[in-house]
Image 1 (spheres, rainbow, N blue to C red):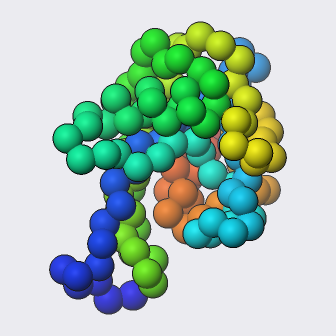
Image 2 (tube, rainbow, N blue to C red; image 1 turned 90 degrees about the vertical axis):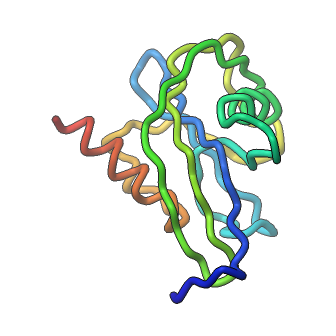
Length: 138
């Protein structure tokens, strides 16, 4: 897909949340959403003037009902869809308080890292899955 300067870029803060069993929290996008019906890592848009970590903390509180207390950068993914360009700023959530759950009506699971490839993710999320699975196998 050819990209041009008129394609809007959506900057997204993404959290990779791991539990004590080493499983990763993922949620299924609602059918009416862009890439609906596919699984994703939680997060959301970075607002203008907002730091990525501020967006991550805000979004994970709204979406997953957790308060992030520590996080570290994992990777950055740029992906061009037919209708938009996304820039995913992906962070490990190293510690948090609360019990992670889905607050927006989405189905969610704690998935074993080695099984992540069994879930269908949006194309932009595939490099995150690959990164996690590569790290797991090393």
